[in-house]
Image 1 (cartoon, helix red, strand yellow):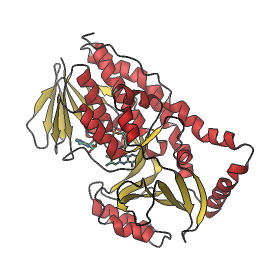
Image 2 (cartoon, protein in one colour):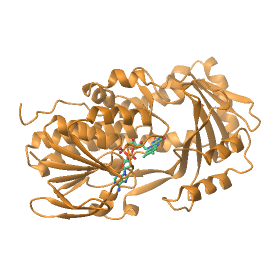
Image 3 (spheres, rainbow, N blue to C red):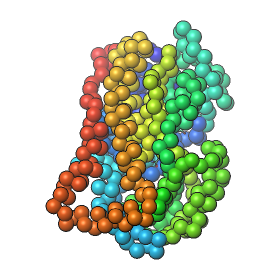
Image 4 (cartoon, rainbow, N blue to C red):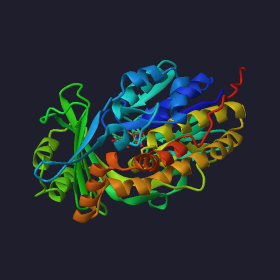
Length: 401
Ligand SMILES: Cc1cc2nc3c(=O)[nH]c(=O)nc-3n(C[C@H](O)[C@H](O)[C@H](O)COP(=O)(O)OP(=O)(O)OC[C@H]3O[C@@H](n4cnc5c(N)ncnc54)[C@H](O)[C@@H]3O)c2cc1C
């Protein structure tokens, strides 16, 4: 049975490891971080991805970790409330959709994939050389090894994609904004409450699920900005400069940033590629079809993509080219439909002018009293629902069955 190397132990990589192991493959996962990476914001699981979580036996646990957020409150520079909405609508969720902390999901997936998978933390692939029989892989720290197949599940800035398909600028498209997220003390005592302070061209937020005594801060601001992706101190200075002079709780959040254990800053970008495989190498999750945090569907795409890729490889019974082709056929429409959500969502996340902020807040205050309220809600949730269910999860035959 094929011996498969996965680069990246996050949502896509761990889900793929789980399903490949279920189908009887030998799986090794290499992750650059010393352990599965914690941190990150709340993420949503919807539609077909709920089916995948259920098939992994994880849905009850995922629901147990649901953020259970109640309300989103919008404030002005002086902290006065200027609008409010339900947390469900704010997150574009309905029905069975679940919101969970990214770190909680990664932990659950790691436990589920667990036994039978070889993990190599604190290392990274540095070179790939394909031969007719295998891929020879060089690592930054460990000795070189050979694998039948290599899958890049190493996110937006995938090393595997750069090595097998070419440089990142060909595939990564900045949607015009950056996002920064990190943990801060819950100094406002927020409980399942989301606060947003929209300013022209930038937004700042803070929320807490009420569990533990911390909260998350979120900053959204326009690209382009110049910084070294590996230099967190430089990125923190950049954020402090960009938001200096802003009102509400911004100065306190920026003070807390310097001690944040999980500082994250990246562009809101999508990955668009004509093919997700080349020879014995394939990509899954953000590495192949990042939809961006603005889509709200990156995690669901990673869960579904990993399930489909593992299933297609199992059914192909050793013919990896056929397996990769089937994966692309089954996933492409779903990936594209979800990518389409981002541009529109982004317009609501960062409002351009003071007039636009005033109008949006007025609409929020009026909405409960308007006759067309349900239609307005459907305009938010309908496209997300349709994209999230734009694939039917099927059963895959394992070679043994
Ligand atoms: C720390 C962090 C915080 C995030 N926070 C948010 C958020 O708040 N909101 C949001 O919408 N999205 C966030 N994302 C992205 C979101 O998790 C993904 O869109 C989604 O879950 C798809 O997952 P993925 O597994 O494809 O990619 P990712 O979750 O990005 O995972 C990629 C994994 O590959 C690892 N990796 C990268 N390069 C290498 C390498 N060379 N060798 C080995 N391993 C490598 C990374 O450490 C990471 O574990 C975050 C990602 C990370 C890594």
